[in-house]
Image (cartoon, rainbow, N blue to C red):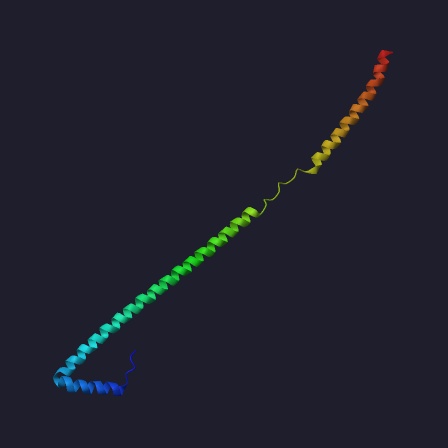
Length: 127
């Protein structure tokens, strides 16, 4: 944090010893230590708060991105479900249609035969 070397500390302690004297120097060193500890604690608490805020913002950003991705995927999935055509209904077997055609042909043949059979009967009854 501070770029203080051993020689600089030695100079400060000698000046403090000369100014304060040997009786008050230990008390002054203790007070200075307490103040330095308080300053370090407050700096560390501020750093922790900043880091927790950054982590919280990063977490919120991550949650938001994940939520947006899920919403996009959900919309794409719904769009795919609506655009796909439902499978066509199974057609009725062609055999019944063929039977109805043959039935109508049989009916026409039967009608023609009945008409032909009636014609001689009618001619016989007229005669």
